[in-house]
Image (cartoon, rainbow, N blue to C red):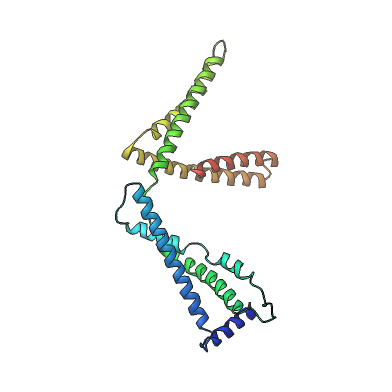
Length: 254
């Protein structure tokens, strides 16, 4: 890399600029041009998408901030650098390939500049940004959860119908089945709501998930404490922690 920078500085000097600081100017200009082109591309793509969905209108400030964030996000120049590195070191006559060092230096500089710019700019662009919820996906999820809950209730009812007759502990089976079905009925009631009630149900669900995750983490910490105190065998501790991990994955995924 030092040799590449030295060659690039020599090339810049040959073009009439005595100070190698001009390399930074080239990098800044290319980085700005790429960000501007990406902003225009994302802006045009978003306008086309909104037009296709019959929502052709002025973009909101939040949407413009998202476009700016997309324009800054990601590294630009990696593929270019890979291509530049394939340039030969010398021509057929043995002379050094012209401006190879400058091309590599500029490609690497754009990568570094884009990373630094994104690290500084993205947190500021995204701070306090609130996007509207994706209602279409939420409605699909709600319908799927209601349908799966109804199927679960029917399956429990069939099992109760098949197993209860003639059993001495029929009341225990009926009570256990009722408690399971009640959980699914609560899910159906929460997911079948619309409008403001549906939004309140989602907020309540998120709050409940937070409490469940807090409780599960406390369970895991207590099991670790018991295991360290030799009040619980390793096999039992691993099994219980595994159950908590699965439950935490379930509630955390929501």
